[in-house]
Each structure stands twice: as structure tokens, then as C-alpha cells.
Length: 354
Ligand code: PMP
Image (cartoon, rainbow, N blue to C red; front, side, top):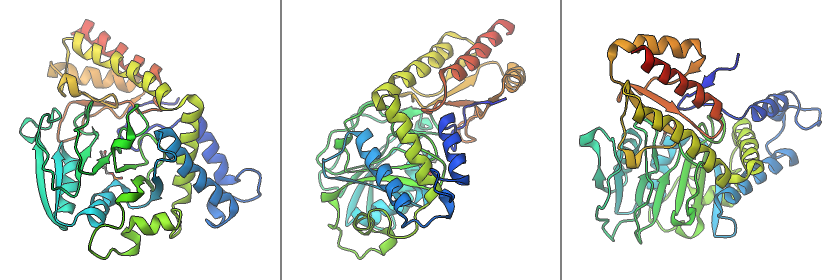
């Protein structure tokens, strides 16, 4: 039986994508060869890479607006240092909204001065800081749009004239935004896009080439742009599955369609958390994430019962991150509404038992 997969990432992908991906490992589109045994310079794979890059820009509404999409390696963690390597001359600003922001800050400190313009650390990152000042002399401001561990998400982004860099690893392609407010967006594939192994980078071309340091080729966005994201052998399987997932999303109606579904899923679980006295939400209401719902059980004695009920229903991956505790239900794009329904039914059944 297929489990209800609430895993925080790697996570559930659409069933039809899994099916096509597994078929392509045996034979790609009737060519008599596997996807993973052909040259990345073959016309088949070049076509896949081109399509993946075009779909990313199309879904984000950034076609023809001076942006390039790249599929790189090294995870989102590599982007923590690449962004600084490519854009940080003197001083950059970071909003500290949790573990992933802190990791980005740690890498960037190797390249210049870092101003932590705001932080929610003293509240264990249970909200998104608001109303902070942004110095005008920053090389860029770095944000993390969705904080996977704490279940917080920016609903509004700060307005500023300095370039905006955003880690969207855990909410890319999940909601409509004016993506052109960002100069660089990055996202590890393994939540809303595909398997681990590639990272989408969407960069505005006119911010490239301004930093004064020399950049090693593999870390230089300009090199990857000039080589159409094929400077070296790309992670062919991860790019292919990402392309299939983006095509699935496009066929579904794109980001507007998935946003509506994601809102319904989030409303269902958050209303249960609010109404059911056995559970309490962790993140501040106005900032809670539509991707990762974090919550506690108010009566510890019911924990074992709840865990057992979840296990019996085939619910996977709802334990909270060790730094937050409690539970975390990740509801990425491919998670069906039905899975959220099953979890919510168990939560309300537990209330009756309690
Ligand atoms: N940023 C965010 C928001 C994340 O959720 C994660 C991983 N869960 C990362 C960065 C790090 O990604 P990776 O493991 O691909 O380096």
C-alpha cells in the first residue's frame, strides 16, 4: 500500500512522474537506450535540459524578462556560498529565520561583512521578522522564503532597492508571487521539483559580472549561463525528473492551480490544529507555512496512541525536526488532499479518545 507521505524532503512526487521516470531508466522515449546511459550532449538530453530550463521560467512567469534558469549540483547548500562568491564584495544583509538562513550566513561570512538585519532566533524562529530596516549599501539581501524546520513562510517580502536573493528550496512552485522582485532564486529539487541531486537557480542576468574577485568556473554563474547549464556533466536523472514534475504542474494549470490546492490542504490541517484541544500550532498564525505545518500534542500521554494510529493508517514522516520537536506535516505540491484528510481524521479521533 502506498503510504501517506508527509516527509519534509526528499518527499512525495506525483505518481505519474515516478512512473515515467522509472520507465526512462529502462528506455527513454523508444530510443533503445536508457536516460542514464546516453551522452548529456545527445540531442535527447540537450532537449530535456532546454525544456527544463524553459519550463522553470515559464512557470515562474519570468520568460523574456532577462532571467536564466540553471540546474546545478551541490544542493541548496552550495548556493549558500555561490551567492556570496558571485555577489558579495563588501557587505550583505541576511534575515535570520532559522537553521538554513544561519548556514547561509556562515558561508557568506567567508567573503565579506554580514549584517543580520533581523532575526527571530530568540523565539526559536516561530515567526518571520517584520518592519526591519534594510541598509541601502548592501550588495544584496538574502531571505529564506519558507523555513522548512519551523513551518514559517513569508507572506509579504520586504521592499528594497538592493538586490534580493531568496532560498525557495521548500516552497518553489507552490504559490503565486511576483518572482521578478527577486534577482536570484535558488531551490534544491527535492521538495516540489524532483529527486535530490540538482538545484534550480534562476538569476537575473544583469546582476552578474559585477563582483571584483575571480571566481572558479564551477562556482561562477556566468560560466553556467554561457554554457546553457551544461558546463560539465549535469545530473541527468535529477534534471529529467524535475522536467517531468514541472510539466505535470503546467498540465495541472501551473502555479495558480496548485496554489489553490495547497491552500485547501493547509486550511484543513490548520483548522484542525486550532479547533482540537489535543494539538497546538508552533508557528505564529500569520506566518505559518502552507508547506510544512508544525504542531505539538498538548497531552504527552496521548503521544504513543497518536503515533500508533498514524502508523496503522500508513502515515509517513510527520515527526518534527529534532530542533523543534513535536510534529511536522509537510504538504508539498504532490501530496494529495486525501492524505491530509486521513491525518486530520486521526487527529479528531484522538480528541474523542482523550
Ligand atoms: N534551504 C532550505 C530552506 C532547506 O529546506 C534545505 C534542505 N531541507 C536546504 C536549504 C539545504 O538543501 P540541500 O540539502 O539541498 O543542500
